[in-house]
Image (cartoon, rainbow, N blue to C red; front, top):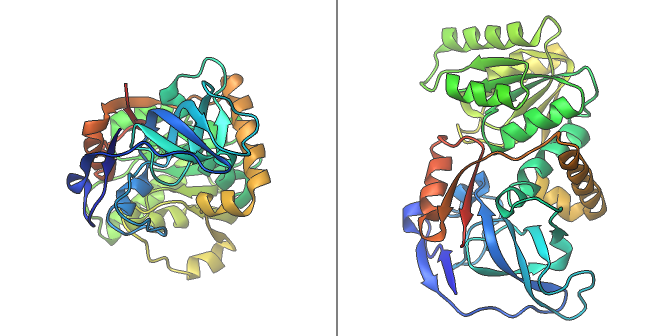
Length: 332
């Protein structure tokens, strides 16, 4: 079988398409014939050894996939050969077949295409955990979302609206703003791509405050980081929650005096560790996502698909912050 693997530390250009043996599932495992694998920000970090987890090389990136059960290992119950499944596995998805722990799999809901199924767990899973467990979202809240047109950003727009919040989408272009509006955003703020000086940063903070309203943002959902985090923190409401999700623009250095002045919290959102530490709660949240999808309140936007041999292009596009919605690698 073919697998796109990393053999050395580096960017997507270092990935190599290898021919390797088909693995056999062990106890509690399933062999999945992969049909689609979504690209996520951790994929860009892992191959550069910049992520919290550093798998032993060579390995395939890709932690979010959908496919068909091809073989079932000892002790696995509830899954049979031919079942359509989706899974979050950390890495390994950019291969034609992959071993998946049965505990990390879910049946694909009826009528959901593989590309959309592969785009649900990590993005919407991160966001439902972030908004509910870390942000304590409630109806009537105002949520400011940085990077609102990406896969995780759009999941935040849709879920925040589903939970009854007002959504302010912060994006880097008018085109991305339109995408966020189509997903349900109430207000859009365009932030600059170029480096901001103090005056520009203050101006952006003012734009965030104007869009959020006089009370500010009850929740800031920061997927971007870098120079955008401080202006967003300045627009937070009294006792607001600033959720740290990702850093494609760099890791921000926050002035902690602002947390005192707003009596606000800065909270980390580490979905991968959450799923391992609280598996039962994770399963319940996935069930809730299925219900929201069935009700038409969430619908992953797959903007572009790539064949396996071009998966490096998808990773590069996400890394350069050019992606809108989800980028998905398909095997057929």
